[in-house]
Length: 185
Image 1 (cartoon, rainbow, N blue to C red):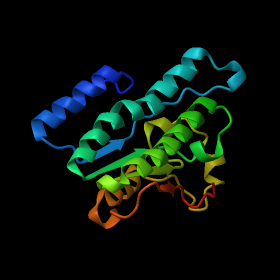
Image 2: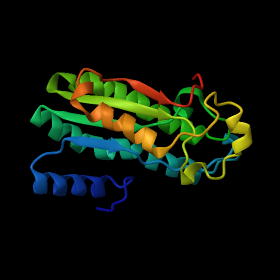
Image 3: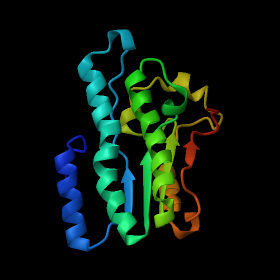
């Protein structure tokens, strides 16, 4: 069901519709992300606001209704996709790094709030993954910094998310799993 993750009312309506149709909400994977790169001194207010709205405010917009439902069910899995940029910062990406760092901090706080209700909250922090978002990244420069010698695959991130949503990860909460080919953050 398509909706704007930066629109709080649209997220509330989508969550309500899903819960009404299925009577439960067991898994939420927050995977919204955009880039609008510029050095901070040249960044427009719109570039800042759009990246924060899509990458961070969407976490609040979707996680609030999901966490409430999961807490009432006494079971749930929330996995948010952040970025290693949220841990290290990246030049030209102050907006992106701030948003992804915010997702990490909010997830750690929420994990403490709802763990006793059987809900886990974890974060995946990918480095460079083969997606449309990294299509314009200077590959040669980046590959030299990645010990694995390659960008990651979306399927590798998905496998990590699937594990964090499984019963095998029931005792893991508040964690940040870096998926970065061996790059230290």
